[in-house]
Image (tube, rainbow, N blue to C red):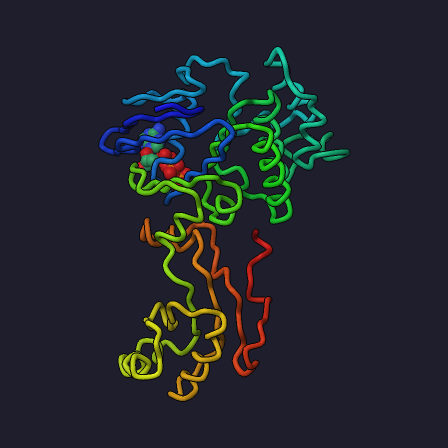
Length: 333
Ligand SMILES: Nc1ncnc2c1ncn2[C@@H]1O[C@H](COP(=O)(O)OP(=O)(O)OP(=O)(O)O)[C@@H](O)[C@H]1O
């Protein structure tokens, strides 16, 4: 295999725990690769393997070199847990890390890139908020202007506006040719940033591909989620009734909700009519296109961990199909 990052049959065990169970992948130069998976799936272990910070069985290379031996200035790494000295200011920290390299970027410019400026840059690290700290850590990973950037859950603890700023920064870096290897629990994050996404489960890569392809293959169909009484949604009689003539959609019960599969936006009115004809009460409707969260659920069998809900369009009852965008979670995008 060739690529800026290569893993071939990588295995890693900690005692009886198999953290990586034969992972092979290749990431191209300039590509943004997103790695997702449940807690304990092996994401951090794979980052550690690719950055030469843990020994593994199998083959790993970064920029065609052994990760343990590659020139450090070519790599940027933001580990999941990283605590720089608390009693240095953000500026002092950046200057300190910049001093480790023969060539580095201007510390103030890097801090400005991550939104740390003015008074905030003069505060001790330990007095910064969680989100500000994480931004400073991202800046530290960028100070050597790396060719390959590893980010292990970079936006954890950062507010939505700060996340968007960082996403734009990462998009800019990728456009400039930086290879980015990103782990995340935010499906919105990887769907927006990653050229390809890898799903890791129990130490194995169960699917790899561009978000769109994965959604098409594993995301299911667009659907209408009908919030109703749990007794109604769980009623075989209601499901059988909806399965009858004049209703051409597949309906199932999911945790007290009716899920009507394969509904085109223009067909929402037909579904509402059918529900009303059959006397099925409902409180709200949400139309949802398949997205990476659905792929995650399908491939891992677990709920996504960033607390996301339906990224859909809510339609209130009795509004005659008027679309209420308050139900959309676009703010997270
Ligand atoms: N140093 C270690 N010693 C023992 N077990 C470890 C060690 N590091 C990781 N593991 C185990 O290896 C498995 C994979 O851990 P890893 O941290 O790679 O998962 P992850 O996908 O990054 O999880 P998370 O999403 O929670 O960060 C887990 O079962 C973990 O407990």
